[in-house]
Length: 191
Image (cartoon, rainbow, N blue to C red):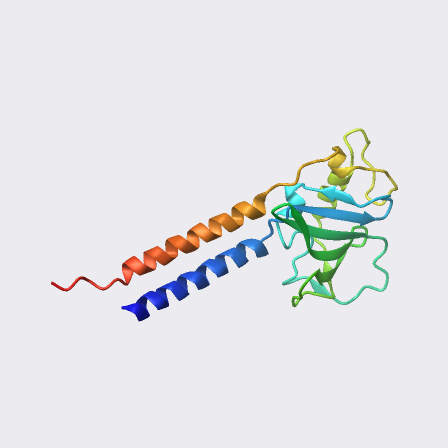
Protein backbone atom coordinates (compact mmCIF):
# COMPACT_ATOMS: atom_id res chain seq x y z
CA UNK A 1 0.00 0.00 0.00
CA UNK A 2 2.78 2.44 0.92
CA UNK A 3 4.61 1.85 -2.37
CA UNK A 4 1.45 2.73 -4.31
CA UNK A 5 1.04 5.92 -2.33
CA UNK A 6 4.72 6.79 -2.80
CA UNK A 7 4.41 6.14 -6.54
CA UNK A 8 1.26 8.23 -6.82
CA UNK A 9 2.82 11.07 -4.78
CA UNK A 10 5.91 10.99 -6.96
CA UNK A 11 3.83 11.01 -10.14
CA UNK A 12 1.67 13.86 -8.82
CA UNK A 13 4.75 15.88 -7.91
CA UNK A 14 6.25 15.28 -11.33
CA UNK A 15 3.01 16.30 -13.06
CA UNK A 16 2.66 19.47 -10.97
CA UNK A 17 6.27 20.44 -11.72
CA UNK A 18 5.76 19.82 -15.43
CA UNK A 19 2.58 21.91 -15.35
CA UNK A 20 4.26 24.84 -13.63
CA UNK A 21 7.29 24.67 -15.96
CA UNK A 22 5.06 24.53 -19.03
CA UNK A 23 3.02 27.49 -17.81
CA UNK A 24 6.18 29.49 -17.12
CA UNK A 25 7.73 28.60 -20.48
CA UNK A 26 4.68 29.99 -22.23
CA UNK A 27 5.36 33.38 -20.71
CA UNK A 28 3.68 35.17 -17.93
CA UNK A 29 6.36 37.84 -17.61
CA UNK A 30 5.27 40.72 -15.43
CA UNK A 31 6.95 43.37 -17.57
CA UNK A 32 9.80 44.03 -19.97
CA UNK A 33 12.30 46.86 -20.16
CA UNK A 34 13.39 48.27 -23.49
CA UNK A 35 16.65 50.20 -23.86
CA UNK A 36 18.37 51.44 -26.95
CA UNK A 37 17.84 53.56 -30.02
CA UNK A 38 16.46 56.99 -29.18
CA UNK A 39 15.51 56.12 -25.61
CA UNK A 40 17.14 58.22 -22.87
CA UNK A 41 16.24 55.69 -20.15
CA UNK A 42 14.97 52.11 -20.28
CA UNK A 43 11.22 51.96 -20.82
CA UNK A 44 9.12 49.63 -18.69
CA UNK A 45 6.27 47.96 -20.62
CA UNK A 46 3.47 45.79 -19.23
CA UNK A 47 1.52 45.29 -22.48
CA UNK A 48 0.25 41.69 -22.46
CA UNK A 49 1.07 41.29 -26.16
CA UNK A 50 4.75 41.72 -25.24
CA UNK A 51 4.82 39.87 -21.91
CA UNK A 52 2.58 36.82 -22.25
CA UNK A 53 4.68 34.61 -24.49
CA UNK A 54 8.22 33.27 -24.24
CA UNK A 55 8.31 33.19 -28.06
CA UNK A 56 6.80 36.66 -28.53
CA UNK A 57 9.80 38.14 -30.34
CA UNK A 58 10.85 35.03 -32.30
CA UNK A 59 10.05 31.35 -32.62
CA UNK A 60 13.25 29.91 -31.17
CA UNK A 61 12.27 26.39 -32.26
CA UNK A 62 12.08 27.04 -35.98
CA UNK A 63 13.50 30.45 -36.92
CA UNK A 64 17.24 30.12 -36.17
CA UNK A 65 19.48 31.79 -38.77
CA UNK A 66 23.16 32.52 -39.32
CA UNK A 67 24.47 35.75 -37.83
CA UNK A 68 23.64 38.68 -40.12
CA UNK A 69 26.50 40.84 -41.44
CA UNK A 70 24.84 44.03 -40.16
CA UNK A 71 21.61 43.68 -38.16
CA UNK A 72 21.30 47.47 -37.82
CA UNK A 73 20.19 49.43 -34.79
CA UNK A 74 18.20 47.64 -32.17
CA UNK A 75 16.82 47.42 -28.68
CA UNK A 76 17.95 45.48 -25.64
CA UNK A 77 14.93 43.79 -24.09
CA UNK A 78 15.01 42.34 -20.59
CA UNK A 79 12.02 40.30 -19.41
CA UNK A 80 11.09 40.25 -15.73
CA UNK A 81 8.78 38.39 -13.39
CA UNK A 82 7.75 39.28 -9.87
CA UNK A 83 8.52 37.16 -6.82
CA UNK A 84 6.48 38.85 -4.16
CA UNK A 85 7.69 42.42 -4.39
CA UNK A 86 11.07 41.54 -5.94
CA UNK A 87 11.56 42.17 -9.64
CA UNK A 88 13.71 39.37 -11.08
CA UNK A 89 15.23 39.53 -14.56
CA UNK A 90 14.53 36.27 -16.40
CA UNK A 91 16.21 36.70 -19.77
CA UNK A 92 17.64 39.20 -22.24
CA UNK A 93 17.49 39.56 -26.01
CA UNK A 94 18.36 42.12 -28.66
CA UNK A 95 15.65 43.00 -31.17
CA UNK A 96 16.45 44.63 -34.51
CA UNK A 97 13.11 45.80 -35.96
CA UNK A 98 14.31 47.29 -39.25
CA UNK A 99 16.12 44.13 -40.41
CA UNK A 100 13.87 41.63 -38.63
CA UNK A 101 16.40 39.83 -36.44
CA UNK A 102 16.54 38.78 -32.79
CA UNK A 103 19.70 37.83 -30.92
CA UNK A 104 18.83 35.82 -27.81
CA UNK A 105 21.44 36.62 -25.16
CA UNK A 106 19.89 34.05 -22.87
CA UNK A 107 18.55 33.38 -19.43
CA UNK A 108 20.03 35.74 -16.84
CA UNK A 109 20.76 33.16 -14.12
CA UNK A 110 20.86 30.00 -16.17
CA UNK A 111 21.11 28.76 -19.70
CA UNK A 112 19.05 27.27 -22.48
CA UNK A 113 19.60 25.75 -25.89
CA UNK A 114 18.56 29.07 -27.47
CA UNK A 115 21.31 31.20 -25.86
CA UNK A 116 23.73 33.11 -28.08
CA UNK A 117 21.82 32.42 -31.30
CA UNK A 118 20.24 34.57 -34.03
CA UNK A 119 16.59 34.24 -35.08
CA UNK A 120 14.15 35.79 -37.53
CA UNK A 121 11.81 38.05 -35.59
CA UNK A 122 8.05 37.79 -35.44
CA UNK A 123 6.98 40.31 -38.12
CA UNK A 124 3.89 41.38 -36.14
CA UNK A 125 5.86 42.40 -33.05
CA UNK A 126 7.25 45.64 -34.55
CA UNK A 127 3.79 47.26 -34.58
CA UNK A 128 3.05 46.13 -31.02
CA UNK A 129 6.38 47.37 -29.67
CA UNK A 130 6.09 50.68 -31.50
CA UNK A 131 2.62 51.19 -30.06
CA UNK A 132 3.86 50.43 -26.56
CA UNK A 133 6.74 52.89 -26.89
CA UNK A 134 4.53 55.75 -28.06
CA UNK A 135 2.92 58.08 -25.56
CA UNK A 136 -0.70 59.05 -26.16
CA UNK A 137 0.33 62.62 -27.09
CA UNK A 138 2.78 61.56 -29.80
CA UNK A 139 1.93 61.23 -33.45
CA UNK A 140 2.80 57.88 -35.04
CA UNK A 141 6.47 57.68 -36.04
CA UNK A 142 8.82 54.97 -37.14
CA UNK A 143 10.23 52.83 -34.39
CA UNK A 144 13.81 53.98 -34.89
CA UNK A 145 13.21 57.73 -34.60
CA UNK A 146 14.47 59.43 -31.46
CA UNK A 147 11.85 60.19 -28.83
CA UNK A 148 11.41 60.54 -25.10
CA UNK A 149 8.81 58.22 -23.63
CA UNK A 150 7.75 57.04 -20.22
CA UNK A 151 6.39 53.60 -19.38
CA UNK A 152 3.55 53.08 -21.82
CA UNK A 153 2.79 56.78 -21.63
CA UNK A 154 1.68 56.43 -18.02
CA UNK A 155 3.75 57.25 -14.96
CA UNK A 156 3.92 54.31 -12.60
CA UNK A 157 1.93 51.85 -14.69
CA UNK A 158 1.37 48.80 -12.47
CA UNK A 159 2.80 45.45 -13.48
CA UNK A 160 0.36 42.52 -13.54
CA UNK A 161 0.61 39.90 -10.78
CA UNK A 162 0.13 36.85 -13.04
CA UNK A 163 3.15 34.92 -11.75
CA UNK A 164 1.79 34.46 -8.20
CA UNK A 165 -1.60 33.35 -9.52
CA UNK A 166 0.03 30.88 -11.92
CA UNK A 167 2.09 29.31 -9.15
CA UNK A 168 -0.99 29.11 -6.91
CA UNK A 169 -2.92 27.28 -9.62
CA UNK A 170 0.00 24.88 -10.17
CA UNK A 171 0.19 24.11 -6.44
CA UNK A 172 -3.56 23.51 -6.15
CA UNK A 173 -3.49 21.29 -9.24
CA UNK A 174 -0.58 19.30 -7.78
CA UNK A 175 -2.35 18.79 -4.47
CA UNK A 176 -5.54 17.73 -6.24
CA UNK A 177 -3.53 15.22 -8.26
CA UNK A 178 -1.88 13.84 -5.10
CA UNK A 179 -5.21 13.30 -3.38
CA UNK A 180 -6.75 11.90 -6.58
CA UNK A 181 -3.98 9.34 -7.00
CA UNK A 182 -4.02 8.45 -3.30
CA UNK A 183 -7.78 7.80 -3.51
CA UNK A 184 -7.44 5.86 -6.78
CA UNK A 185 -4.71 3.55 -5.47
CA UNK A 186 -6.05 3.08 -1.97
CA UNK A 187 -6.25 -0.46 -0.75
CA UNK A 188 -9.83 -1.64 -0.10
CA UNK A 189 -10.62 -2.36 3.53
CA UNK A 190 -10.41 -6.05 4.50
CA UNK A 191 -13.64 -7.38 6.02
